[in-house]
Length: 299
Image 1 (cartoon, rainbow, N blue to C red):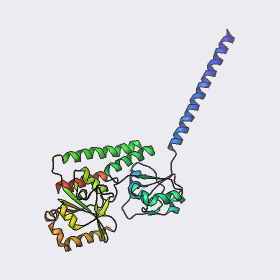
Image 2 (cartoon, rainbow, N blue to C red):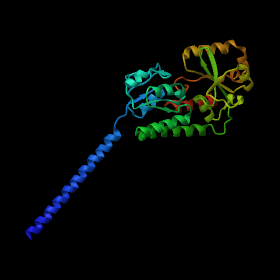
Image 3 (tube, rainbow, N blue to C red):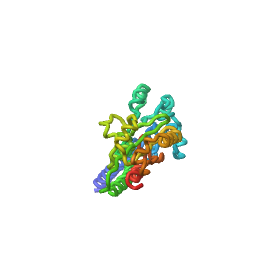
Image 4 (cartoon, helix red, strand yellow):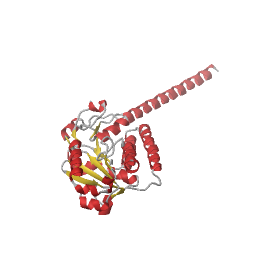
């Protein structure tokens, strides 16, 4: 009997040992998987907009573009890689990124050079409101930040629904968006970020009358614009904003043809707030949609 009890006890201890070993093994495996999943990727951002999106998702950045735009203190501390439209390839490579992210608007001008320098790059669509939302979702999934991404997108979607509901049944205005840079005026089409916002809100872009515009911006001609006679004129600046704004004021005050526009007669000419409107969308795109709604329907 003693021998039998001893055998049973030995067997139980052996099973317990195996069980403990199995649990420890599973724990180590889980820890290894967790460590692997949480392993930080070296991420360098090529634009301010993407830097701010990634920051809001709590994705750690290794570098950012040089900018005069207001950015957070944490972004200011990061190494700079140069202008978004012409980044310094050597500075990017020195950071040894796992991935460099930039806007799709720069793919044609930067893609080949980045590839030749061996920099793994991913381009994201910020040229439309829905593009911004998709970018937030894609980045949140890529960097395992779905919870942060969902919080941002829930806010976007709730406010978007409220905005669209507020303009139901209202007469849709004809709109002209002029993009001004020092020495040059262009018209923003529905393929531009600001044009897309106006379209989402039901605005009729005057550029639609000129055929299917192939690009976000097309040449401006005041005679052709007057034929469309928009209800609302929006003025957008980007590069050297103060000079561009001064150029707008000089043109509108000095060219008598502007007095023939209904928008001018009815004081429906607005300068788009630089904090919300640019050539691409940003984390403030939902604020921009709210502002655009005010420009088109409430002012």
